[in-house]
Length: 317
Image (cartoon, rainbow, N blue to C red; front, side, top):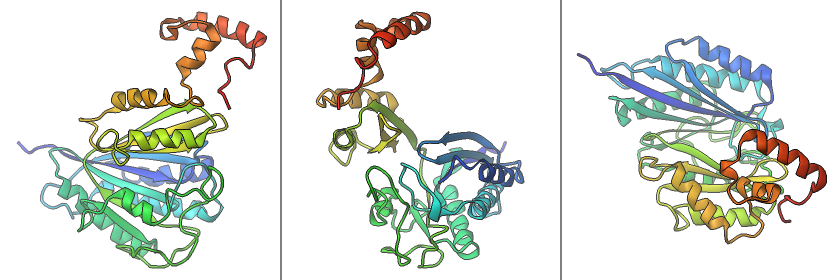
């Protein structure tokens, strides 16, 4: 009996408000029904959407044509045709119209197979679509990491306040792409494609406007900052009163979301300007165990307290 061989692909696109563009991208994916979109996550504040696709793989060669690669390439084409990166705005950092694509092996497939699809896709994106494309993880000969590429391209540096105006503004890149032109078309930006074992994304929202305080928490929780191993983290403003500690969990079987949540809450105790929802409820409801309150009691009490003490529960500035 042949073994089940599957691969997953996560596609992150710098758009969530343009419904016409999203519909076009999703229609393009449906041309390959063998590689369905199994999850879609839109964030209007970040102006970013993430798609997860899954498909079976051919067993004889990782470079054989597969529906997963076809679906993703079709989505990339549709995104480039309907989104102008030069006019994009949002509070999430990004490098291009299609910002990041990652392949993960599932079931009995191998990381080498996932890497083969990633490299094949990068060739097509670079040559046919003329987008500078960088490879990372198992798809890169040197095993270069995603965060190292992003760091060299200025991904982690906000352009103004807490907002990012987009990727490299110069047409010349500080890093040579693995595929595609060395010059950047500002309407397209650049793309990073990789292959790794499964990575979890886990964001912890906190009630604060103190970006410096939340950045300290993000640094301390990350492996790079001496915190939890295999955790990458940064602070991202998410609306007017919320900042997220956005985390990549590179080894989620060892360090999962629950550990990250607890550690972020522990570190936040050192920051007076950072609060969590249960802190807000404690002040709003005058109790010490808001987790045990019924929804009806919460709504009733909340309405009463909001009408009489509307500013009591606000985060300290």
